[in-house]
Figure 1 (spheres, rainbow, N blue to C red):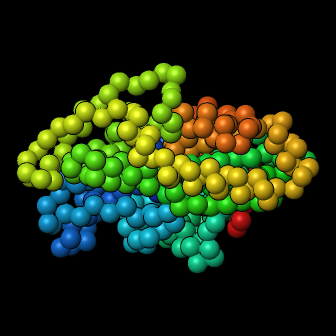
Figure 2: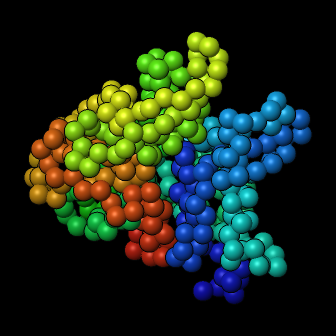
Figure 3: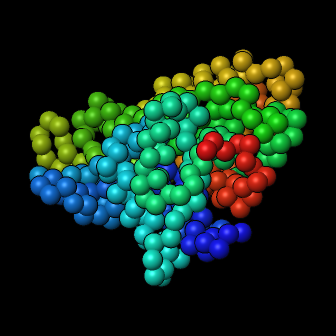
Length: 342
């Protein structure tokens, strides 16, 4: 421990396409949508997170809402940096500090990320006072967060369905043996619902409404044991231009999402076909673990289980399993140093 170690704070960040979560001192201190509202004229940030999310689809010409991350990587460098800065400043433990501490950070990245995209994440972190920045692949963080012992000579399969990407990986001996990253995830599901209502009901809805539909009655299969009630969805009639309401059932949503879920199933099958036989034998016994917000889609575990003939388990708190794993790495940096990229 150096003399200046008290000036350094440790934080773990899950910088997601849909949500950003930050852990500080073993607690999730920030859990906000990854969205920024800024003034078009001055470029000044008006709101971030939940506040900016409320403005989405309701702004006038002078205000613009931006999602700085696309498909799990930084698309708008400036906005992502400002968003990160404001999120870090809102951490209660850092607010009370007299001066700005330097930060030791661990940040999650998708497994299919390129060197250039990696550098963008790193530079963003360094600009917000990151003294030491480590990166960890999302499936690895999810596995640690679920409670899998990644160091054992045993194969485990993780499917992490986030907002921008679905990460599928087979892990053994603290490393990724084979992985696949597909750009079909929560955002694509939302767009599928918008498209379905537009084509089948002539109803035009915004992203926030589609997200609500997905959370309340989103389903991966039409034969659910516990069936959610129908939902009333309001939007604009494309024929008359008047506001209108339609009643939507979970079966219709399952139909809308069918093609996208098939592509996730195909990616899982592809990863299984590339798995070495000894690890495939382990996965037969341990099954598949699901993490990420997308895994909360009703009936998705059942559907994947039917497709792969393997048991499928959903993480206890799927939305937070990745950031939890990152937090565990932060606490035991020496133990997990081999899974971190500096």
